[in-house]
Structures are given as C-alpha cells and as structure tokens.
Amino acid sequence: MEPHTSPRPDPSPPRASPPPPDALTPTPLTPTASTASTPLPATPLPPGGLPSLSAVRIAAGVRAGEVRAVDVVAAALARIEWAEPTLCAFVEVWAEEALRRAGEVDAQVAAGVSLPLAGVPIGVKGRAGLRTAAARALVAAGCVPVGATSVPGPGTPWQTWGLGAGGRTVNPWRADRTPGGSSAGSAAAVAAGLVPLATGTDGAGSVRIPAAWCGVVGLKTTNGRLPSADRTGLAAAGVLTRHASDAAAYWRCVTGETGETGETGETGEAGEAGEAGEGACPPLTAVWSADLGFADTDAEPASIAHAAALHLEEAGLVRLRPQHNPVRLEDPAPAWLALRRAPDADPAAVRAARELRAENDRRLAALFREADLILTPTTPNAPHGHDGPGERYSTALTWAFNLSGHPALSIPAGFGADGCPVGLQLVARHGEEAALLRTACAAEAARTHRGQESEDPA
Picture 1 (cartoon, helix red, strand yellow):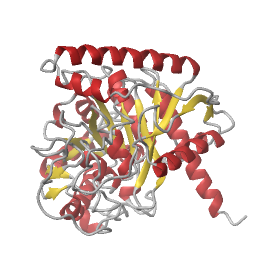
Picture 2 (tube, rainbow, N blue to C red; picture 1 turned 30 degrees about the vertical axis):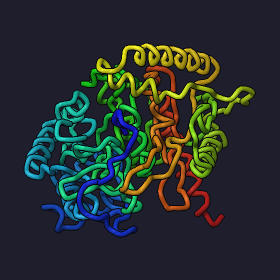
Picture 3 (cartoon, helix red, strand yellow; picture 1 turned 180 degrees about the vertical axis):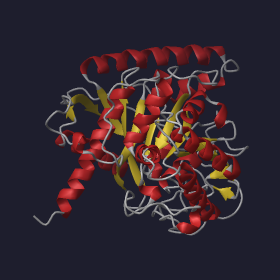
C-alpha cells in the first residue's frame, strides 16, 4: 500500500459493483485433462492438485520429469481463465508467450540445464513488472511469467485496491472486501491458487498489507538491497507466496545467496527438518508491540497476531522478551508523506521528516541491540470494503520500516470474525532477510505438524 500525499480516499472507486460475498474462495481447482495437453500425473500431486503445490515442489517435479512445464503452465492459465471474471487479479494474461517460454524450459531441462524454479508460473506486478531485476532473475531460474497483476488505477489517493482487466480486484476470501494494495493482484492471484508466487513492491506496506489481508506470505526486502526505481528510496522489492519456502527460494534466486533459509521438505510444506526441536537453530529473541507506541490498532487483529506470536514462542522459534518498557516509535506518517513529496515538499517539513527518521532509527537500533525481531500485527485494522478506508491509514504499522529500511515479513496469523485473514509482521535487522525466512519456514512447518497431530486419533 502506498498512500498518495492526500489522506482522503477516492470517493468513487472504479467500475462495477463487487460480486456478492463468498462468490470466490481460495479453494483449489484440480487440473484435469482438459486443462493441459497431457493430464498431470496423479501420483506425485497432493489431493488439492496444482494450486496447492509450492513453487519448490513444482520445480522439483519438472526437473525430475514428473510433469512438463508446458502442462503446469497450461493448468495455471486454465485456472486464471476460470477465476478472472470474479477475481480480476490480472491486467494482462500472456498465454501464448507463457506456453512458448514453458516449452523452452522443458527443452533446457531435457538438455541438463539446472533451473532451480523450472516451470513455475508466476505473476509480475503491473505491466512494467518484467523489466525489474527480480523478475529477470526469476525468469533466468526457470520461472514462466503468465501475466501482469493488477495495481491501483489512476485517480485514487489511497492505493488500497487494484484494477484488473475486468474490473476491481476482489479479496479471494470475501469479494466485498479489498485485497489491499498496491500489490493487489499479486496477493489475490497467489491466495486463489492461480500462481504460487508473484512479485511486488513495497513503498509503505504494498506487499505486506495485501499479504496479510489475503492470507499469504509477503516479504519486503531491506531498502536498497535490490534495485528499485523509486527516487525517494522508500520502496523496496518484494514477493508474495503461498508457502514460506517459496519466499526463501525467491530470495536465493534474486540475491544468489545459498545459505540455509529454512527450506522444507519436497512438497514445500512442512518437512521433518522444519519441526522445532532437535537440530533447530536457537530461538531468536523478539519483542512484541501491538501499536509501536502510536498506532490505533483494533483489538481483534492485535489479539490474533499476538496469539500467533505466542505460537512462535511455544514452538521454540522465538523467545519473547519481557517488556518493562513498551516499544515506542514516533508516528512516521508526517515524515513518510513529506519525503514522498520531496523535492516538492516544504523544506521545513523535509527537515522535520529527517529528524523524525533519525530519532526512530536511534530507537530501532536500541531495540535491535536487545532483540533479533520485532513482532506486530501487519495492519491495525481488518480489510475494508471497496468504498475505501475512510480517514484511516492501514499503513500505520508497516511504513515505519520503509522509512527505516528494515526487512519485514507478513505471515498468516489467523482469521477475524469477518472471515478475513490477519497477518503477523516480523521485522529484522538490516540485511537479515534470512532470519525472517528461517522463522517463517519453521513456523509453517510447526503449524502443519500441529494440524497433523490434531487429526491423529492416537
């Protein structure tokens, strides 16, 4: 989400009334023979079919010859065609080019070329998304872009929604709610199982907020770590995925890093190595804050995110520090807005913004001397309707870390009473994306392990 310099919402969001609630849910659509030139083999695929597979698992299947990249991409295109009339997550779908590229991937695999993400269909944020360094790195790793995902249309001061080719992008969990923005289409497409991975950019929460509201994983990288066209330096590259292991795979591809980031088992879900306990890294120390000292956070997202933080502690992944002194940052809103307007902003406002940023940087440095992670709700509020957020900043808990440049990750925390997802935000020291990703992968493994135990009659 990247608010415009004006705090007022657009009074007339674009086109068409939203579909009724529950018109679309993220239920996997199992591929059939009609969605590909050759039916996907049944044995290697879980019951949910292609949409439930991680990018890591898809790539492993393509490299092993279990399935062809052209069939994986054809199945993804079929699901996009099925979902788009309601979801409106794409501004363009590149079916012909995607199938051609998938054929090239199959040829490379047959020739023995090592492609870590062979045949993985991906969405790229906006029409210019293919020109980013991250997208180029993903394509070099074997990914197949299937389309440009929706971003906000012109004329809105609040980028909390997306505009696809067929109309306003909806939240896959409740079509009368926004998916968040500005990486709206990327989050919706990933949540609905159209693609396992989609690129995003995050200038004030534009990856983390839609990730939270669509119930997926959203990584904002350290500002300046990856190339960005944002002249203000507030925006950073990011990714949205269904599985934490896929966010780790993205990070390895775009940085070339090969260190451990908590990769999981073959399916990209919870492998045995991800379980807390033996062989696990020592727990990271963490501090919890519902409001960072200034945000007006609603009780429900605060409670759900805090419960998720406690689950991380119970799983042995973090150690929450006692809070004798609550986390207290200065509200970053005036500084963010002034720096976003620069060089056209009032010089006095820019000076004040730099002073506020420096003060928050000092406070954050002190926090990170005492703890490895800061944990917060990703947003102070639940997803709002398509008429806009009113006077409220949904960015309240995210844009502090665009101002400071710290890497941050939103992971699913649970669901509110409205049926919409809630996110837990994890923030780490500059350059410590790997710590975020290890924690997210291990948390995903622990959640799956808990679910398996609850289903075990013994």
